[in-house]
Length: 83
Image 1 (cartoon, rainbow, N blue to C red):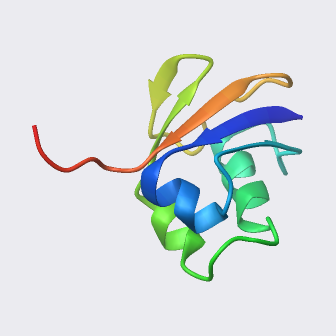
Image 2: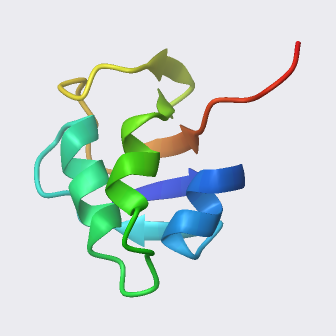
């Protein structure tokens, strides 16, 4: 299990600000796949999550293959407008 915090459009797309998920694999893409299965998620969730960046235990990544160890904290950050 990993703890996921979602912000802005990602939060709206998944329907939660924070939740625990069981990733399909120990990667960012495994976390994304688990988020797409959340019952409250909107149909466009895959598109929205595909534009996000992620913090895995405080380290930024956009690599879907980045490792996500069990017990990690993952922040999902959609693109932000402005400076």
